[in-house]
Structure formats: C-alpha cells, structure tokens
Image (tube, rainbow over all chains, first blue to last red; front, side):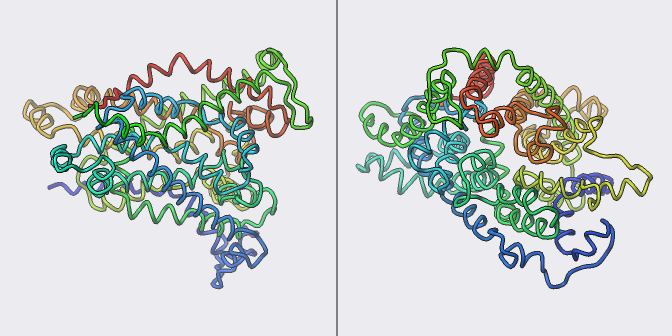
Length: 271
Length: 288
C-alpha cells in the first residue's frame, strides 16, 4: 500500500494555517509583556502564567463572570432547544402534525437574516424585562438553534424502527410514555449531535449578545471583543482571555466529534 | 410510518412548545419589525410617531445601504466559491488513507468550534502591525505592507473568512464523498480512467445536489456576516467593508434610528424572498 505521505504533508500545512490564529493567541498569552512589546519573535516566556491570572480576575476584569454567563447561556440553550424540538419532531414525523410545511417554516427561519430580528428582539425583550438577562439570551439562542435541532431530530426519528413503538402502543402505552421511555433513550446520538452543535453555536453568538446584553449577562464573545477596544493594548491578557474562552466548546466538541460530524451532515444534507 | 387520527390531541401538545416559541419569537417580532419600519422611532426620543413610508424612502435613497448590499453580495459569492473549491480539494485529498489522518481530521475541524468573534480578536492580534506574527513574518522578506490597507482589505477578509469556514464546506463535502459507493471507483479503475477523469465525470456529478445545498448554506451564512468584519474593521476604512448586517446594526444602535434600520431589514427580506422557496425546495424535506 502506498503511504501517501504527501497527503499528510499537504493536510498538515492546511491544518497549521487553520489553527494559526489560535496558536498565535496561545503563543502570545505565554510570553512576557516585555517580549510582546519588543516584537513578535522575541522568545521570552512567562512561567507564572500572569496573563491567565490577570484574565481570571487578578487585574480586575470581569472575565470570570463573562465566562460563567457563557456557560449558563450555552447549557440553558442546549436544554431548552432539546425540550422544545424533540417532542415537536416526534409529533411531526410520527403523528403527522403539521407535516412537511412546519419543517419548511423552520427552515425558512434559518434562511432569514438574523439581523432582521435584532430590533424586534430588543424591543420585545425590553418590554418583557429580559434585556441583559441570561433567560433572554437563552431564548434568543434557542430561536437560532431550533431549526437545526428539528432537522436533526426528525431525521433520526425517521431512522428508528417503528415496530418497538407499535408494540408499546398495543400494550396501551400513551404517546408521552413512548416518547419518554422508548424514543428518548434511543435518541442518544441525535441528542448528542444537537447538544454539541447547539452548545457551539450559542457559545459563538455575538450579534444577539451585543444587542441584548449590557453588563450582567455579557458572554465571553462580547467581553473579549470589548477587551480589544477598552483595555487598549494589553495583548497578553487578551490572548489569555481568548484562549480560555475557546477551550470549553473546543474540548466538548473534540470529545463529541463523531456527533458533531454526523449532526452537521445530517442537518444540512439529508434534512 | 405516520399514524394519524386518534393522537391528534397529543400531537398538538407535543408540538405546542415549538408553536409558542414560533409565535413569541417569530410572528410577534415580524409584526414589531414591520410596525417599527413604519414609525419615527429614534433612540434619542421617547415618542414614537407614525411615519408612513418615509423610512423606506430614506433607505432607498441612501447610497450606504446599496453599497452595503453590493459589498455583502460580492463578498458572499466570492467566499462561497473560494471556500467551496478549497473544501472540495481538501475533501479529495482526505478521501484516501494516509498517516496521521485521524489527528489531522480533528485539527482541520477546529475552526468550526471557534466563535467568529473570538476568531476576529485573534486575527487582530496576529495581524497587528507592531506585535502581530504575520506582519512580523512578512517584514523578514522586506514586505512592509499594511494588511488593513484599502487595496488589500477585501482580499484579507476573504482569506480570513476562508480560515473560519472552509472546514464547514470540507466537512459537508467529505460526508457526501463517503456516500459514494466504492464499486463505482473500482469499475472506473478497471476501465482505465485517469484520476482527473474520475473526479470530473463521476465524483462531481454525484456530489452535485450536495454541493448545491452546501453552496446555498454558505451563501446564506456569508450573507449575514457580521461579527468578524465588525470586530476587525468596524465596516471601514470609511464604509468600504460595511456588510448589510453592520449597516443595519449601526443605523439602529449607533445612529439610533430604529425606524430606518427596520425599514432596511424589511427591504433586505423582500429582496431575499424570491430565492427562499427555491432554497427550501433544494432540501427536499419529507416527513416519510
């Protein structure tokens, strides 16, 4: 068999370029302020991880609370999105509710530019008293992710054999019982796919966060972007903060890579 | 398998949370958006008064709106083609055995997991004129160019967008490649087909429907580019890199004119509307 080392080399170069921004941030976060100021290739490392300590609160930034907000928003969105989309997908696929048009409407949402919604959401959330709150951002992100979740759930429910449910029905189980005791446990891979993608996408949200949060509910994306403008040129601290912000979805998604790949391709292609 | 009839009530109960969400977060906002577009609604003034179609007239006669629309369209088309081609080539290289394949696959997927806004902050770091590794590297070759220069900015933004999104295109195309039965390639090999012929005559035609969907998804997503360009350039220099998203955001929250920004959003949706049924049809959604 050919070893195809050239492919390793080509992909290696591509992977390096794709990871260059992250590598650059990690590199800068580990260098001393002095080295950073003297030029990009002055090798002088900071073994006390000062920038990480600064980012996590030593220098008085609010980064720890941005971080907590992002975790709350993303996990809340994962839970709410699943609770809303899974029963709805079951209802559409197995009980014929709404049929394909409901999926089409959901897909239409995916196509509408999100920017259309920023002003109405701002007004609506102001009226509901949900501006600058975790609840508000969980709702906004659920709105963003519900389409992909519906597509993934309905395609995985379609793949389940119907016989099990039929047997349960004959035994007199209710639809809710079937959903809870049969469908949900069998949907592990689908739930994992929706979970990992929804987590990444809600962690990545910037547009809704910048409009709907001002201080209390600010997530890392907005926090880090504000860092660049408001704290001037403290690049070491910024790099540490950004590196820390990237880690949770990166670790989660790498562990759940199989589901990420399956979810993206089934949500996008098969529908 | 769909069962119908006696489960109507439970079907409705199960779908109810979704329907409520759609009412609160879609139908009501659409109404609010249209109403705002027909009002004099300024951040600086408490009173909101009816405005008729004056906001629409203002948007249509504003060159910045059309410039933003033009920039967004050109940018979306260029990056979709560029990332589609790169993703396809990458998928072709990946579609064989080679050492380190699994690790490299994980590494190539990394940009998918990084928030575009955080990516933009890192771009600002590595592109910074004084401390960035890219200008530092280029200076070694005597290239003292400013990457933010008006001459290069479009090119820079396309490359940066490709760093973020080529992985998406690659992943979806690669998933499509996996679905092509191996036998087709084997019989082509027996017939003595060259690799280039196999790609052009077999792989591409089979992938065509998948490629169409991927291109549409990328086109839709790049049409709403906001985070990266906003953090990198703020739409500048001047308004040269202002996307339609940045235009609407700035009109609403910086200029403070909600009415005009809403009118621009409505016009944008009307301009996109003719394409939507076509795109939705491509997905061939069935419930069976």
